[in-house]
Amino acid sequence: MPKKSERLAALPAGLLPLLSQSQLETYYGVSTWQITKWIGEGMPVEPFAGRQRRFDLVEVAAWMAKNDPEADEIGASSDRVLAAASA
Image (cartoon, rainbow, N blue to C red; front, side, top):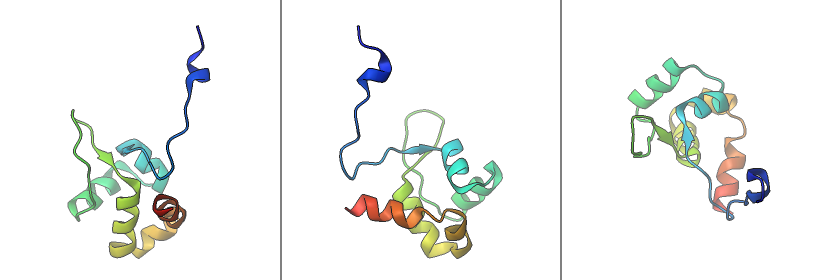
């Protein structure tokens, strides 16, 4: 039987997975408090079954560019994410 690592498949082009809150914190290098603050300010959150939140990185990056110019410096690769999603 093949190992789990041998069954990995690449995501189709343009498809990005939803991030958990802890993954988004790591991506932007911020705390739980900061993510909660951004959600209160209108950062998009994806519906998800269960108690956790999920975030579409493309939508979050677009929201950041529109609402928080300083955060764009924190997540400098957001432009690359937007470009990859539109490709």
